[in-house]
Image (cartoon, rainbow, N blue to C red; front, side, top):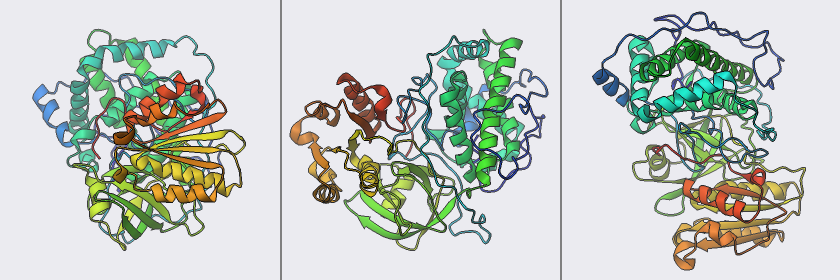
Amino acid sequence: MDAPTTTSADSGSGGGGGWFTPRKAPPAGASTDQEAPSEGRRVTPIRPVGRPERISDDHAETVPAQSAAPVAEAAPAPQYASAAGTPPQPGPHAAARPHGAQHGQGPSPAHPPHSAPPAQAAAPPRAETTPRPAPAPEASPDARLIRRTLEEVGPDADKVTSYFYALLFVRHPELRPLFPASMDTQRDRLLKALLTAAEHADNKNVLVPYLKNLGRGHRKYGTQPEHYPAVGECLIGALTRYATTTWDQETEAAWVRTYTTISQVMIDAAAADELRAPAWWYGEVVSHDLRTSDIAVVTVRPDQPYPFLAGQYTSLETPWWPRIWRHYSFASAPRSDGLLSFHVKAVPAGWVSNALVHRARPGDVIRLGPPSGSMTVDHSSDSGLLCLGGGTGIAPIKALVEDVAEHGQRRPVEVFYGARTDHDLYDIDTMLRLQQTHPWLAVRPIVDQQAHLQLPDAVREYGPWNEYDAYLSGPPGMIRNGVDALRDIGIPVDRIRHDSVEEFVATGN
């Protein structure tokens, strides 16, 4: 779970008891690649959770309206195609983000505190690929019970979310200050992330990497193992309240087991990550290049080494909006000078994006979460790269091109750069310079208003693409249409790479 704060609360298991006693952090040198808690170390529920005390619907509807849902910020929910596998299609509770979209929350003082997290040697990142899943076996008994619950509460999703937060803040008022004061558009993320994880509990090859990413990313909020029991109790309480037809002791036991496993994977991942990387980095703005009236290229210098891979993204927080985090892709491959660049488009009512475009100046200090994402290049292959970048989604595509060049490979790279107008091709000069330097690179700008053709449709006119791996980054609609178009022309889904698509939740930026 996300507890969006840098100050740990020590009462997460108080006020009604917890489900489990979280395990201690693994010792130094412990393996960080375990796929799930071992049977010998698995945490089991201490007690069943009965029906919650009744909270009025008025209370349930008003209390959470001020809150944010603090999960699902650090990693996209499983969906579509990852770098090496085909995760399940998102269920009705999935919540995810596209490249260039800004999400999440967490605090940051206007200036760095007197004591920042100690610098730690961060291990070089690696692409977070997942093996191709085997044919889906028959659902386990717990999975069947969980999906039955989800089907029942689906029509009341908003009420379930409101009741969940009412329970959380009534039973555990000490946790309320850990959340942003007002994040209405992201209020349902915590519950939806938990429900999404539970829904795919049988697919360990996809679910475990997803949960590990969440656990690592949530360190920047100060999330502690003691926070998980409170969330679990309130999850069960909300489901008990609204799954009146299907809920019974057997169903409750299935949810307890599933949540215990989910939370333990996240706890273990965070503890292992603590041994090798800080929870966050400070970054000083060193340049601010306003390319258009609403797009800026922001370059920052992190306060300590920041290892990442081309094609990945991170979360940023500005001093003007504490506890508000948004995702941005790295706009270059790792540089020898250690600088990081981001392409930011200011969007209507976008708190962080407007601050970064219109307010940030050299000398300002922001915070960075850990790198994430699996839209990275497999350098063991010689397949060509077919890249679709729409709007500021060209940023990670540019990074991928630089990555191929730095590895000295001459594999063909085809870039389709989509925009609504010529004005929106803000980085076309950079891409054309790269094309002049590298004969294996072809850059094709696609302007909707001139060609009367959307980017995914334009790709069909070229090809064939049988020997190419596809990469997509841009607005969610473009990614959805792009995936469909690429599959229509015969590219296997396991060769289509992108990190996230915003399918079901309208989010603030």
